[in-house]
Length: 450
Image (cartoon, rainbow, N blue to C red; front, side, top):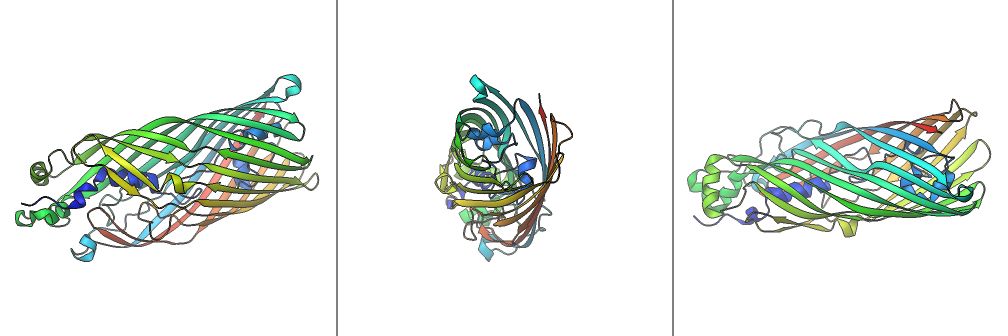
C-alpha cells in the first residue's frame, strides 16, 4: 500500500485550532471580539466609549479618561448575548466526486451566553489628580455547538474560545482639560473544540480502497483543549476642548499567546491499525503548541454636551486583525508535521453615533446606531466563520435613585446579512450553503459610589 495522501499533513488538530481562532458568533463585535463591557455603553452602541463621563468602563476603554469618574466607586455589569446561526446547504465528499455527505443542517449553532464585567475606581493624591482603577472584562470570546452528525461535521462540531482580562490602571490629570493614563492587564486565553475526522477518505485516497475504506465509512473524532496567560497594555488620553466637549484617544496592545494544549483522537479500530503502519505516531493523543496573537485596537472617541439635557457621542475604532491573523503555525508533540494555517483576515472598522437625553435628575434615556465590519470574506469564510458585517440599533436608560446609586439597562439588536460559505475541509469534504445569522444583546449594571 502506498502512503496516505497529503490530507494527513493537515491534521484534525490543525483544523481545530484554526476553527477555534476563526469562528465568530454573530451577536457581538466583528469576528470574536467583544465590546460588551458596559450596559450604559451598549445603550448608545458604544459611542463615546473612550470619552463620555460617568461610566466606569472607561477604565478599560481609555484609562486616561478616569477624570470623568466621580469619586470612589464600584460598578458591575452583566451582558447577555443571544445569537443564532442557522445553516442551509449541502456537503459532498472529495469536492463532489465522492457523493453527498449524510446528515442535517446542524441545528441552531448559536446560544445564549453571559458576559460579565466589574470595575473599581478611586482618586488619590494632591487634589485627587491621580486615579487608580481595576477592571475584570472579557474582550474576546464565543461558543458554538452543531449537531454531531451534521453535514459540516468534518469542519466543526463544538468550538469555544474565551479571553478574560484582569487590569490595573493609573492616570494623571494635568489640569481640568488634559489627562493621560495607562493600564496593564493579564489575559487568560482558553480554547476547546471538537470535530469529526474522515479517516475513510484519508485512507481511501492513500491506497486503502482494496481494504474497504470509502469516504465517510470510518469517522473518528478529535477534541482539542489549550490555554495560556500573557500580558498586554493600554494607553490613552482625554482632551477637553471646553467643559462640554471631550475627545478620547486610546490604544490597546496586541497580546501574543504561546498556547500549550492537548489533542485527543477517537480513531476507529480498523483505521487505527492501518494508520499505525503507514504513519506511526500520527493521530494519537498528544500535546501541541501554537502562537496566537489577539489583535491591537485603536480608538478615537468624541462627546459633546449641548446643554443640561442633550449629549452627542461618537466612536471610531480600528482593529488590526491582518498582522495577527494572516497565519498560525501549529507544532505537534507527536510525529505529525507542523502545519501553517492561512486565515486571510483583514483589518476592520467599527463606527457608532449615540445620544443621551436627560429627562430628569433621576432618568436618562439614550440610543445609538453602529456599523461593524467583518474581517473575513467569502473567499476565506467557512462554517466556523458565518460572520458578516452587521448594523447595530441600540436603546438604553439610566435610573439614579440617589447620589450614590445608579442602575443602567441597555439593549441592542443586530441586523446581519446572510453569510454564504463554500469551503473544503482537510479531507476535501466540501460544504456549500448559507447561514441565517442574527442576534440580540441585553445588559444591566449597577454603580455604587462610597
